[in-house]
Image (cartoon, rainbow, N blue to C red):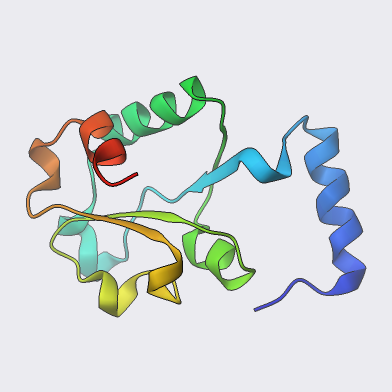
Length: 117
């Protein structure tokens, strides 16, 4: 998916109006599909992740955007538990940082985030 040239200016303007740095913005999707509800990280764990990213200088935008970001060429950090990132990870997978834990609910967000970075 690409952003039509006519929309690029609108996107840039939105970032400017909201005082967001295009290169240091992270989008977070905290929900899974109905079939994958057992694969969701607890909401308070997402708060930890967002706080850590904010502390190191990233702007966090809450939205369902990992795949959209990957589709327009943005490098992503994907956090997966039992879900296979080969099946549902951002494409192409090798362009992104993938963090995979078998039991993500028992992990500390900072440890998960920085383990592979």
